[in-house]
Amino acid sequence: MFLSCKLKLSKKLVSFIVAIMVTVMVAGCTEQVPTATVTTSKPAQLTPNAFKSSVSQTPGTSNSNVANIPALSPTLAPVFLPTATPETATVNDIDKAGPTTTPGLTPAEQQDQALAGNIPSTVSGLDVSKLPRVNGLPKIPLTNLIPATQAAVPDRKANYGAKGQPKVGIQAGHWLIDQLPDQLASLRAQTGGSGGGVREVDLTLDLARRVTQLLQDKGYEVDLLPATVPVNYTADAFVAIHADASTSGAPNGYKLARSRFSPIPVTDDAFVKAVSDSYGAATGLALDNNITRNMSGYYAFNSRRRVNAVSKGTPALIIETGYLTNAGDRAFLLSKKDIIARSIAQGVINFLSNRPVLELREKPSQTTPALVVSQDNIPVYDQADGTPIAYLSKDQRFEVYEVRGDHYVVFLPYLNKTGFLRRADAATVTLPR
Ligand SMILES: [Zn+2]
Image 1 (spheres, helix red, strand yellow):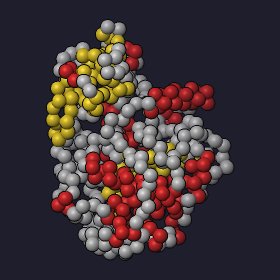
Image 2 (cartoon, helix red, strand yellow):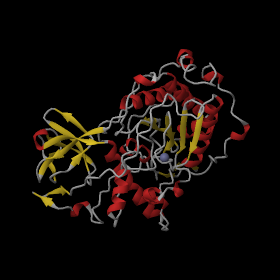
Image 3 (cartoon, helix red, strand yellow):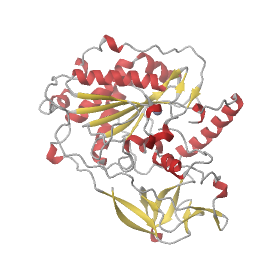
């Protein structure tokens, strides 16, 4: 985000900012992400049986496994991506940008950042160090984001394709991001990462086109989607394709996440597992379990507050296909696009093929549990029965939390870290989703 701003930044300043971002990102990586889970099991072998079972549900698709996915059409020739350029990296990314300190944000912009899973660490332009103090510790101002949308829950259908076949949305991460609607204006600068002279968006678009073609060849209806997701987008599956970037060449591997607010967590977990298993088995890349809050809070998942998001009940995941900033990953990403695309397509097919019949599918939850802080100046601790690190305002809400013994574990806005809240200090409520 910083690196794409129109200001001419000196190299030194860029290095300085990158150093800050790394510090923040590293700090962020140590945080627990309460509900985002990614399977850690060994990738399973793809079985023809899994695919066979799809035949009854997927008219027009052939009975074959991934080995028989037809060759890519010549129109999908890889775009030229130079690899000989110096090792430079940008980490400007919706799904991985760490907490930011952007001075002078309007409340609406702060909310926008928070909605992208990127809760600002400033208060109306003030530094966190200028937060109100209680007993020498920061007091977190009341930060309750009100659901902005009440999008209709789509009718339940066995398949959403026009011809009764499954419909899949494949999003090329960052593609045409400058065209995001006004509600997402603050994300328009998230043009994606890069590494070794390769832009993330060039790779994600190439991969998304290939996956789209492969699924279309199998008879699925597929939408190739840019950064802007259609309003209340409904499909049988939605995949956002991204690639990672780091300021160091060391991190490597792929990772997947579903929404931490998912109204269909069981279904989404099965979707993540299907694609993760297929991807891991076919690519041999390492599985990275460091899911960021910006992945599990991906803007296109946020049907509670976004108009341009997947509808409640649309299985959705984001995949980081590997690190453009890691030489090994990058070489693979650029030279094995066919394998990568096939494995993602096969993961989608496996998920769709193994869904229960409509009557037995998970129904989108209409409510979400939440905590409400019962009094003003309630302390949060660094650990169970530990040292206070901050104070909370009365009525502060936490919609994602973990229960640990006598405490709740919550993610603190503004401070961007987890804290322990005594269970006696908060009430549980149920909110409309
Ligand atoms: Zn990205």
